[in-house]
Image 1 (tube, rainbow, N blue to C red):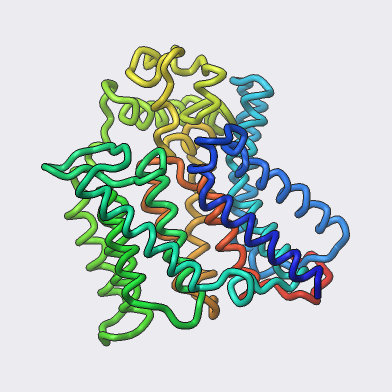
Image 2 (cartoon, helix red, strand yellow):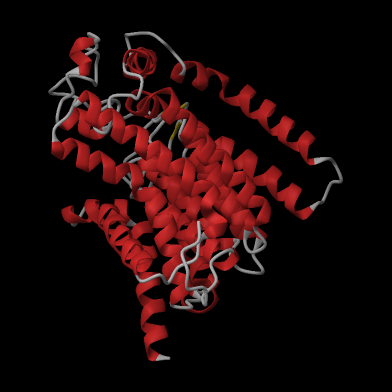
Length: 402
């Protein structure tokens, strides 16, 4: 019993640190590597578990296979075209697999240790208390600017309170909302507070998420008897109307902006290199740190945010990175990998709404950032792994059956 309590405490602490990682790293520099550390431990744990034959994840094979194929083609491009050094390749490889491996590893960990994280350790009243405090701070910041702010809209500034960027603030709130719905009964007022805080961030992705969250809630609760396909069409049309100007900015093939240049030449790179140029070579953080020669080849090394001395925007994308590094086949594999999540969602019985919210946000934000490879993706993976554990991973299964 004491071991279970200790493991529940450890898992709770892990989740809280991941939730507040962006805040903690402002005071403890090494904390910025915490998500990578969790991912590395997850990889080691998963392989050790596989070697001992104490895992059964056959129901997850529909996401395992296409993801492994994506990794295979990216590795093939790495070996064939040899565009980057080992450090860049290894670093980007870890970043690419950290969400997937953490998702699998945490689902297995929770299962093997029979942890009941949200049933015992993490009280929903603690989450309520946290939301109320944060809502008060966000409200004061909105009107009195007590924290640093980013964008301005009229007389109001966007809210991010003590987070370094609105992106981390929004991702944090999405996680809180998903956690709320892991409990059996929830306060509508607390849910509304979270949605308002998302609105205070004044980010298009937050507004889109609010639309999806509310409408999907109607679908799950069946408050209006309308076929689901009509809901989906309405959501997509409404979302497009709101975000069309932002989408045009991102889907821009101009060489004058980092996003436009990266998108345009990702197609060129995939056409010139059938399997892509591999890990660390294009549109990712390590392609800036270990500056990729591809940017000089395509003459985009003078674009603002993409130079050797200023590569702040070089990883400000996701899909161009996937296409540039793994080619058209790798991109197709990644699409199939994500689409297959929808088939898993249909089979979920426990906390389906929470899982959908997390997955939908990652997909929405992937338009503008490396959401599945970001630091907050590990926190998402832990929560989604917990839900997978409750639905698919059986504690007494002792075989690895693909």
